[in-house]
Image (cartoon, rainbow over all chains, first blue to last red; front, side, top):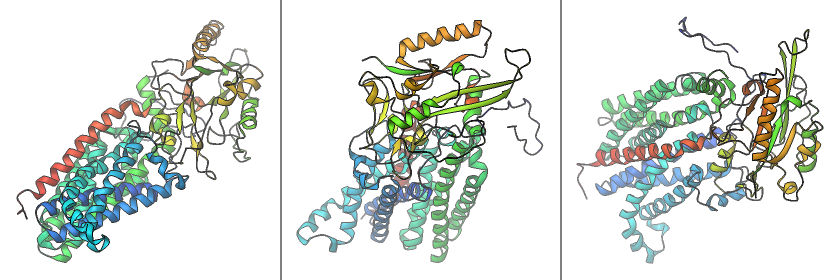
Length: 316
Length: 258
């Protein structure tokens, strides 16, 4: 296989051709189903980000925002749980995830984290919907409301970022090489997507912090992604090219559009806030699918495996 | 118990695939489809859930020892490397993958829930999920046989002793001697792959004598266990989690409290 030249740019050092075994991949393609696992990267981020917004709303006394964010968080968590179990080769054995605790396995850490996160998230919804709770227990739930909101946000910070470790702790070249920036991309995407959801559902007068978070999260995500793509070079190619690269470009455009709409129309018009929120929410989903696909593509072409390793060890 | 492993000396492999057949027979591994792949004599393709030994065939137009021969045919029986630092084992969330008393890495199929994390974790692309079964499978280094003092089925069936089973330390010494022998006989391309405890996986329990670059055989030239960077990954994630919380606090600071 020979090196492609882009845009007529002259290569100062001719890139070495690399050998492969009939062009076959060196690595296995991840067996994770995209709609479930890329979907979970998105919904997990939303569950976490909305928990943070719910806690903020609770502490600052914005009941409408708190209620919608708590319900959204539980809904996103439920979808996450469904997707994660459905993706297993043996879904009936999902409980084996809690058979051991293994710090060397981000999936084990994540399973425990998500289980812990479910408790305050559930209490939060019981507090919002007292009809779910037997009458004698309602005062207990009431008293637990604030601690539940704060601990859901704290655990949520882990839920929003561990998924980056989950995919980066693999041999998929484009995922693994991206590990320094990916948690920041995911944290930013979780914040802007969740704040986008808040802009869609909360009244304008309670969405001030969501507007701030939407912009801050988007800036965090875009700057981390920019740094990542600059640093990665060849193994970063799937983040710029292929179907994955196109998704990520579209996600960036939607993020920028969402931020601009938030700033210009977010506090003026309900419809403007809704559109801005929808763009950010959709961009967050698109980012996760793009990142997921980039890693998968990097396992399918032996160039992404062999070339960086060959450069590392030099000509044998 | 001393660590056991494979030394696969590809310089004497004749491409008979007896190892593939013996492995399938002993371990009741299902077929991988009956396909003609157009890759020389290789109709297996690569290691996977249903191929725990895979013989690679490489035809090269390259002058060899005989004066008028211009074709070289490389054959090599690939297998799970049973790494010292095994990515599959590290990331397995259920504890299904475990390290045996022989230093090998084995899947407990009654525990595996098919999460698939080990599949992209392996730097060699060995382990895979069996789609109609939902669980992952790979070479066990015939855990059942070696516990009874027998050698693994592939090594037993190999007619040329290209596949050698034994104590890892002894195999490494034998392999070094074999490389010296080949190099002094003029086979200057001979080199060991996976024999060094200083490599990215801490040395492979199943290592190889190759006659060309590893990538020619479909092997990664410098494999590194992904978990080598895990501590740094967690540190970056913790920093990102801090930023996540910090931005949340900042966004709500200054709003009137209830």
